[in-house]
Image 1 (tube, rainbow, N blue to C red):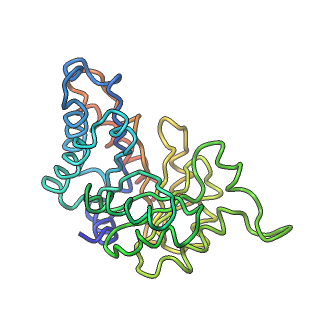
Image 2 (cartoon, rainbow, N blue to C red):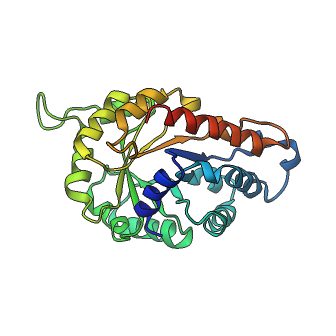
Image 3 (cartoon, helix red, strand yellow):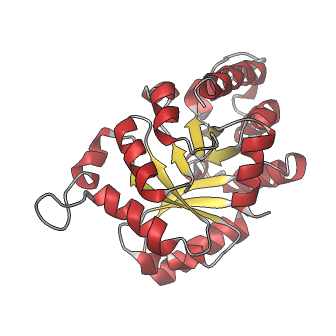
Length: 273
């Protein structure tokens, strides 16, 4: 499955820009899953099966699995998504960034061990550290650009190239769009908490897909996000919500509650497309 082809098909066929983030926190699981050795897989599997027809992609965050020695459950989860929902791409949220030889191993981990369809990476160390991911032409490479956390401004908003020059996040956006995206498999992370910067990144990058975290629990505005980041055909965005959907319910019906939250979020996004 080519990531960009699958993503564009999901935007159109499911009429959805919603990405559900899979950030499993066992402390917040329903009581009937507490203490089970496979609780992380079972929780995420139920969320996936309840929401797959409403999303353009899923985004498991690797730290939530690795911290609990649950990498095998992450592998099983991605296998399940590919087997049961084969038209739904998986973005591995890993935010890797290291020298080329190490990046080669991270690329193998993401694309061969986990069989993810895309990965988030950091551009801070330059193009040679991105090349190993770009070598997988059918996989998505989604680079951090203007992140949703408050501290992102510490570096991303610095001016580069002298007084009145472009800001660092703008340089990243331009490099990706003009130089690094030769295979058409790049995207950018731009937080929903900064709609003006979303609009600027869209201006600089044309139709490059944007992964937009920060709605829901982080407080990003859906209308402002969509209006700032949509492409001319009303697509171009993977708008991610995690906790507000995952933990919408607390009982055995948690997956049904997650579905209702996902449906409401998708429809709120579509109202502004």
